[in-house]
Length: 383
Ligand SMILES: Cc1cc2nc3c(=O)[nH]c(=O)nc-3n(C[C@H](O)[C@H](O)[C@H](O)COP(=O)(O)O)c2cc1C
Image (tube, rainbow, N blue to C red):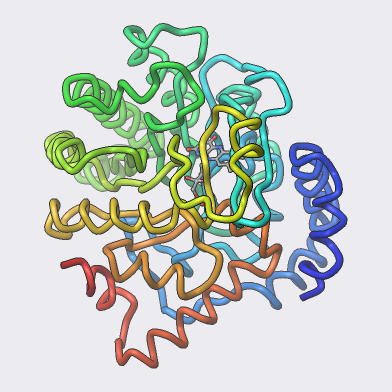
């Protein structure tokens, strides 16, 4: 209430990117003292589902912050205190880069949407790793999302992803491979079968090597059994676009299976302007290119989740993202097949209590619908 009646109107008076930087900085400063953070956690952290096991990791709750909000990991401990079960930082690239010229982020409040063409503005994978070393881990699962550096040709993408992957590997609970941002030229070509298979296979090979090395380092008096238990690949997820056809999704599921990918994040922003109902067409066309997120993306993202769940027969974990503002939106994604959910635009519009409100609401819906566990509900309306 406080956020929507006071904070949001003030933030929305600022240019979108200024408001974003200000809000992130304010959160980092306000919640840095341990005592304040603990207080926030007591009010906002809810774990009404027991521990959720997903790709070998244990989550407090299924609601995560989507990639792009905290690209450089500037406030991970503070954001975790807002009650998210997991955070996905990034996208980071191997080379630090400024992104596209501003303005590149636009609000469409009548449609509860955003359009962005930021183009992976970030300080680079090494800066993120150094910051995480300095500030420490958040008190929840931490995913790191990596993308291709703009200066690198798409034909050289594998080496570029591998370079970022090596840097972030020791810091991540899971790593998401972003091949779906519409704002880096040719990036989405990596969603094609041959390119995707090559990229993911190379990353998994390196994943095994790095995990083995870390396992060996951790066990000085190593016996074979100790090494075997210490070696666990970091779960690898791939993030896909909502603008794919059923045939593309089928291929992605096939590649994901063959390369033993642990999960699919569905979806990124859309390049279509479908379902924009209230923003004048002139305003939309004046904004120009970019990815659309928020309410207009919701239905399409849910369709993609449902298709991925059906095609994989529930064998690949899906992180559902796109147009989640409240518990009912999250529930729709879970019923379609998502094991976890994330939000970005909903966080901008609903504010700091969003994760708590969704968790509380989800627990209520679960009880009302007669499910004993969240797991039982995953994919219950996927057909
Ligand atoms: C301003 C902005 C920046 C984003 N940056 C990234 C990014 O760097 N990497 C990424 O994988 N997704 C990025 N996204 C996409 C979101 O993570 C999410 O997939 C998408 O916005 C749909 O969810 P939403 O409707 O809850 O916003 C960004 C979204 C927005 C609005």
